[in-house]
Length: 139
Image 1 (cartoon, rainbow, N blue to C red):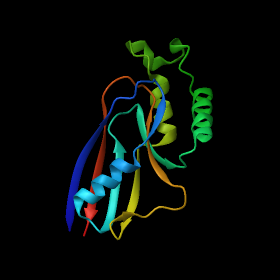
Image 2 (image 1 turned 180 degrees about the vertical axis):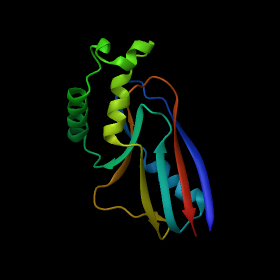
Image 3 (image 1 turned 90 degrees about the vertical axis):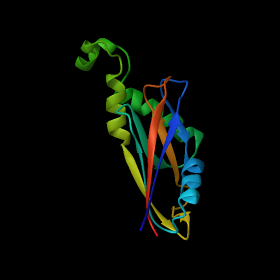
Image 4 (image 1 turned 180 degrees about the horizontal axis):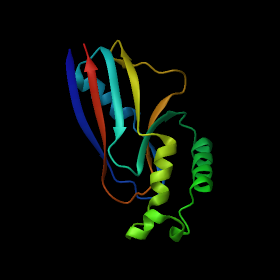
């Protein structure tokens, strides 16, 4: 069995945004040489997420509005976590909602997706470098 590991680095200029990282993961699968197996993609920061959904602008807008309603950034004084001098308690909660990682099957050297599925990096406390781990195992 082969094993492959790569870190992808992102610096999202906005506090909250989503980036389609499917092409990056496809490149990792190609580089790994794995034809049949699994790929794990996970955000290595507790204020960021990896998730699968449709790459549709309206949906991404709806997610941002919904997440901000569930865990608003302001007022930062509304969160005990922010008593430590941080201002990102909302980002931790948004990450918990959107999830830490995804696992996708690799079949015939390709990501084995359903219709419209794409992999996204979700940033909830941006404007700095953060990494995503891509771990591939298989034959």
